[in-house]
Length: 277
Length: 293
Image 1 (cartoon, rainbow over the protein chains, first blue to last red):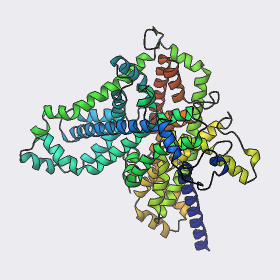
Image 2 (cartoon, helix red, strand yellow):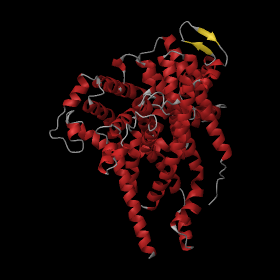
Image 3 (cartoon, one colour):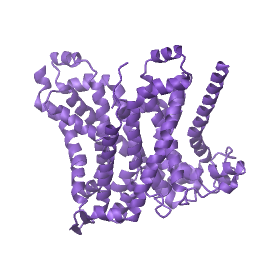
Image 4 (tube, rainbow over the protein chains, first blue to last red):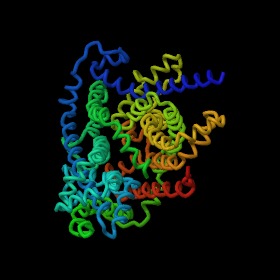
């Protein structure tokens, strides 16, 4: 009798898990399928597969909706911001963890506090500052905030990893005559690839998906990354449902592809602040 | 060796650029924000020092009060929705080894999807004509319950909270599952031998030993609900009639659309203070000792 109850419980739990899985994935699949339909078909046949598969919506999104340019902007801004922030964060983490100086713990805490600070408390002054510096509506003006707000979590994760590297490694290199810089780039970084990839990928996702900063620091629509482009598409072409769907698919496909290959690292990285903190 | 590691020149090379960027573009702006919030300014020529008037105006501003109320609604809704579901799924996956990794990956997927994309997806789900929700109601002959979910002041916040739930239950579940995995299996074996049921195992073994992570998770949910922006900005823009306005959308509108930058700075300060307050109070009032096992 006990065993039957246990089995029913298991089947019930499994069913709920499957249902929730479908709920998680279905909207995305629905979007993908419907991006190949025509605007009228979405009303007549919202659930089924398209009568004919056509890329027309994607082409329209690129030509009329500016999505192609948004995509290029997203790629450029995200790659630049991620590359620079990963480089600066790993150097800073190494300096904080491995080098001896009086203020190292204080500076570490300074970076960590950043994890609790909402960016809202800084954006108005940043906007004013950039305005006076004349870099509003430039790529520098959007990349710099993304870099600095990525520091706390990046330094947190990288410091955690660096503190586990045995000191013998650097000692051996320095005895052989390496400078610290060389030891860092030729020895420490290569064995830290796993953590660096983690930091890079979570920053990639956060920056690719961000809406607030581009809305504030950029105004030219040809410099806008995808999230803003999507919003504009939503405003301008709100009845072109299938065009909008194509635009949305453009935005989420890169993150989904990255997720398929790196989901372990992404999950570890994005929950690191909570689990290790 | 120590001399090399203590070499000031190298320390500067490694740390200084990052630190300088950080202080200039994060810390300094926050301090300036405090100052800026005491002005009425459009950041060009009109600058008037008005002390705390921005703050007193905010608390008499019915739209700000509404946005504060909506943030609180989101906090309560998220706590009620995310915690039990995340715990349930986390616990289920913890005890079920088969397929648990796949489920984890699937549940976490919504978290990485761009907020704007999620918003637009759910615009379609909530659409009055071909949307999923209304179609399902039709299927079950509940057509009377069909509503313009996002256009009605009564249902808009609930509809938004459901979307947030879709997006983040997986995230919180992964955090809690990670905490559960740190519990030694021997404790479950021992309690099984003593005849404990699954529910008893959960309440007496699992739950107490993950409390410290749950505390952090609660902080994440509350501060997350305070900071929420993308979804609301794209699904309703704070409408209809400010019914779904939250502090972040209101701040953006006040600052960057109507140029009332001092007012917006004040809202930013309030958001900062609230986040700090939440972290401090949860840490103070929810005592969890580190249990030795």
